[in-house]
Image 1 (tube, rainbow, N blue to C red):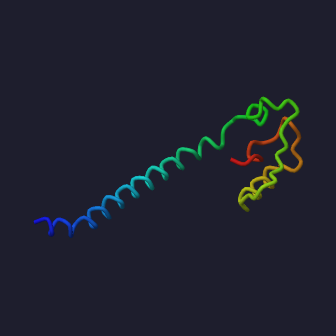
Image 2: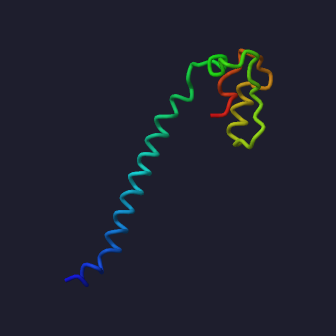
Image 3: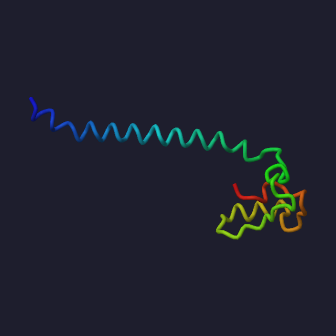
Length: 92
């Protein structure tokens, strides 16, 4: 009896692992869908960075995606002046 049961442990472990993986993927997908509407908030850059009285430079010095660069270009981030800098100019 024990030999027959030992044969199924790898199968049981694989199914359990797949179930945990699927649940995690579903949770991640749900979190991403919830986060998208929040990224287009009505908060201004002045509200986002209230502790910076002289403003915050929207120039990003690290690596960013091509879509982020395109969003910045469309929003006119190069010519924006504090405090009227669109929030799309800042990385998420």
